[in-house]
Image 1 (cartoon, rainbow, N blue to C red):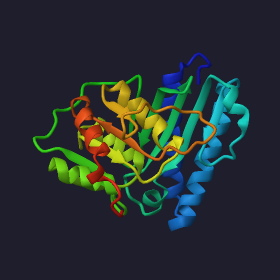
Image 2 (cartoon, rainbow, N blue to C red; image 1 turned 90 degrees about the horizontal axis):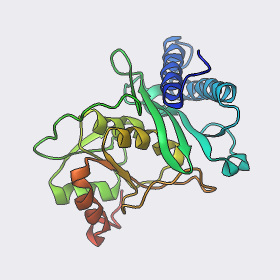
Image 3 (cartoon, one colour; image 1 turned 180 degrees about the vertical axis):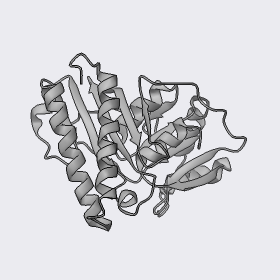
Length: 255
């Protein structure tokens, strides 16, 4: 790989090859279920961390699968990765899992790539590959967890008359908005920086809205890496969705 590869190209390259590695691990037939998920997490993480240290030695790194250190807090440029977003889906042989590779600069999700290797032929969506968005559906479609839909998402969907579309990982749901398969991804059940950094970067590059559910900006490379909620949607829907999330009637329901 050329040392001159820019940040966006590097993010896409790493996400793509981590996805290929994960497919190889799954196709080996040596692991199943939770053991497959653990093996995939470890192998993909080692590849991404080693590659980033080789290609961007001066940058910070935050990964779900590596012990966090305070070193990154003093750096303007920090790579934020989730080597396997949707471990359960990956272990079950499903397609709705992803790899996230993002670069936050001064806390902003500037560069990112999300690979969806389980889709036919494999798909990588990245900040340097932005295209036009497909047309919105007549009835809004809202991506939700296939196992634990967030209370706010269900309430907002009810208030908007939106269709619920269950699917797996955070990356798969966010990229479904980019791909025009749904119009909204609203999450309030608890996440971390690595769950949303790359999806947010890709969504913003494609002209979508990405924020906290109260409309506050997404700020990364914080000491506390918890980022409990996320809204990705078409820009024209953002104001009404943020208002709906602030409505007391959409809060306090059991998931």
